[in-house]
Image 1 (cartoon, one colour):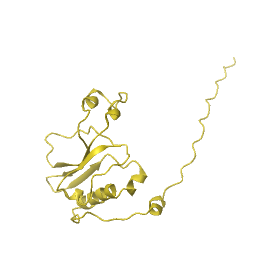
Image 2: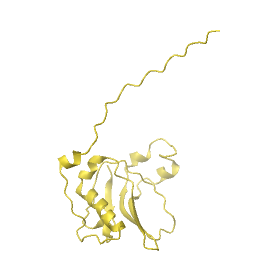
Image 3: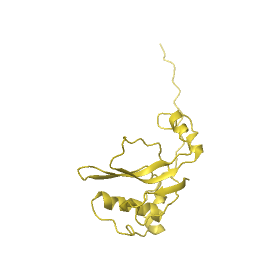
Image 4: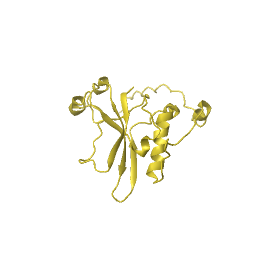
Length: 158
């Protein structure tokens, strides 16, 4: 769970969205070009230090990530190109149940409206979602099957 989440004040994607905490597989230590012209951090947070203590790997930790302990990280951003094109990126949304969080859902809906060039309502895009609606189109997940034991190779007969 992330602590101290903050939203970009004044950006249309943040309209009606309150800081929220959800359990997700947030990716951080995002690298943006410098200067960040046209880019606005929309959602930021300070990841738990424990998440920076995992073993090193090409898609996990490294000394640079560990050096960032306690620093605020960008988790969602908006980009406005000079030719008026717009984009939105978010490192969350890995777990389906997070769509039940009204503020997360509103941020994502606001982003869709903003990237399409439309005006985001003053209080953000309103939506309701019941538990039944959230579960309506989920596929049944098959039960995990035990892994088959590898076949023993038989020695070749001459």
